[in-house]
Length: 103
Image (tube, rainbow, N blue to C red; front, top):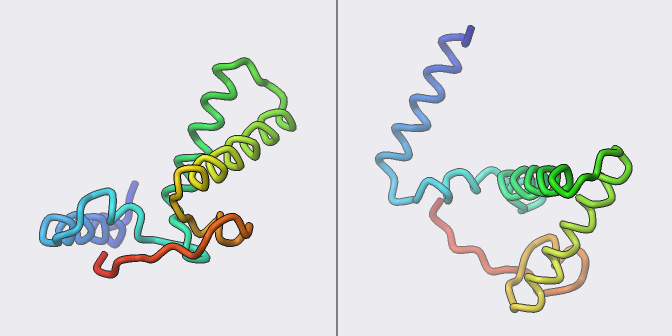
């Protein structure tokens, strides 16, 4: 069972979303580590795992390697289209992205 504090915190987050000018995805992408969205990493890895299972990859080592290749493919694709990302910046592939403030 959820504690009252967690329920109150979730309700406050939903209320802030309803009252803010930020979209739902902007709010989801706002928690960051090393200026990279936690939400983006979780979704990317989850999709890599799902696609890996769908393709038939079963081994833990193979799925880990597939997820790493999936992420590197994303970095290369972003760089090819001129989209600057923090991970690409850390790898030296692109310039540091300019972030708009607000959310």
